[in-house]
Image (tube, rainbow, N blue to C red; front, side, top):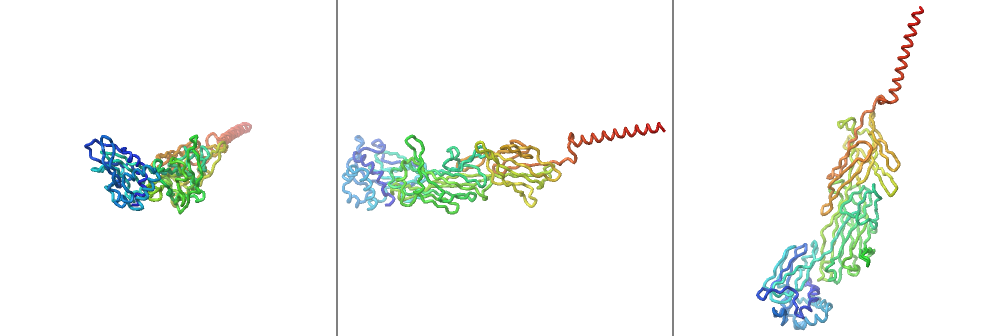
Length: 536
């Protein structure tokens, strides 16, 4: 009978209604059959057990239950131990909640409950009608073990007066868990890496980051706001966060836990409660568990309080480019049976997921046209950073790849932002790309400036829905982005250099001048010869 421990806490809180013979349900007409219809408003299936605790004679006109007797759900040993049903009911009503709790404990400890009158499984969102019931009071509870480690599972316990047709919805209330990641464009404003300083609007289900970035994460857990008060203790609260291989977990001693509550001015107040939790990191799994001997009932000020975990993880060289990205999944195991006082069965939330994306730039180098791909060039790639009035760049590694010929220049692990691609060496006999970019007071010749702008979709399956890349200034290069692969590509085509300077340059002027001198010289020679011939 462990499943019913303290279940009568809810039942007996309503004993006054029974003693004063006031109904707790909706009574039907005199010719209606006594029945109880339970609607399961939870997200998991429930196996409900029905115990008759008290019975009696119901007077429809007076709306009272008289001649109160023990119901079939209480054993004969229990009936003997407790005395008459009417006297016991009055004692419980006079004793209040403390007497009710003691009675519930005694029922369980001494196994004073018989087999249930009825038992049935009800699917989530469905209902079931317990029909042809004798008038009286009934205890409804979940069968033992059926809600343990079940997603969104929670144990129920209700007492109903059943006279006529009674319809009742289950009162199910479970905690929730949410994982978010910080996102910012550091080419527009300085990135915030301290989790406590991240603005609420910058927490998302998705983000993109450069490889090497220290990424702030926030986990937010709630309490069962409607039923939290029904627990004597709340001793299970375990957050399990699993990071993908592309994310390096934090050191355990850098993880912080806060209690967020609302002050008198309705402003959020954060209190560091890290010492109330045991924090471990095992491989890619971070666990934040309420420490042994701790009770959430003694930590939380109200049922509306939130438990917030903050930490940083690092995007590493194992990061997945584009595609499914680099996810986190988190779930919460929690106390879910107030009938056990909060020390018994446990429920579990579904996994919540967020994803960090990162991208790749592929630069294809050609001579003359796209039929002559070459690796006889050198490039530099810079990312622009803005911090207030300060403007700086950071060089990003751009390596040759693409098989044995290595004719593609690749930079992996980019996020949104503004970049400068500069050609520093052109193939022999060819010109570099034509254009220049100025940023932070520095001019980059033979360069192009472009911006990476992804669009995300959150929810159950976070993903990149568009990867837009726009040329901003400099050379006339064209960039394309593929949201599925996370790859950005551009073709850089060099043209042959002239063997002579171009038309209108100093070289042609020299030739024009030299030609003129030669013509004049020829004319002088011709005239001189003619004069000499005449004299002879």
